[in-house]
Length: 219
Image (cartoon, rainbow, N blue to C red; front, side):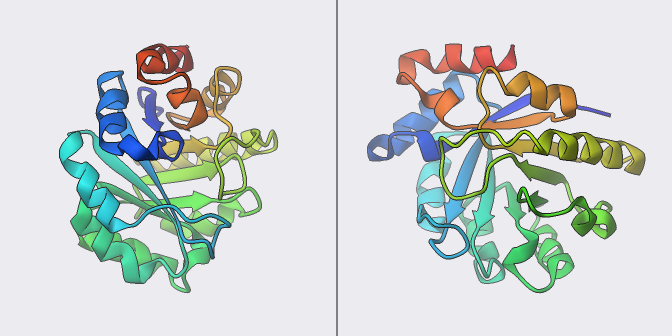
């Protein structure tokens, strides 16, 4: 069963020169979670931030930190992000040799565990892990950069994943990340998403516009 829609603004689109203030502002504007994109310049063609930044941001909000690890290998860094204040840690199947072990590591640290599916990654990757995960993330762009256009073919994947989750009988967040704006958000929701990551659409215009931006995404 779908849960109430939640918005997870991605700080990748925030003003990095005043990141703490940006996190407080988007929190006060109505964010349900704070999405933190971690990129290593290897697994994806961009370099963002590490556990020290997550730790520094933790005092600025009580909202859950939704940490998306676009790094390879991911395993050596999971504990550091957990200790830094991550609440949800999501990894890609391609980021290590033993996905089940990685998920168990996250759960063993007391955190919620997620699996992210790139546009070319099949749903079959998580067939045997639906009993272990708390979140499934469909990437509706190729990971690495903000501001990309929504890949239409991922709507079918979202629908199929919604059916898989419902058939499992478990409460698993179905998150969509990439190209989410006022035009694509309703379509992702209709396909089955109950959590949306938005970067540019959430942070555009500065703090005075954040509440309106989030309200528009909710529809």
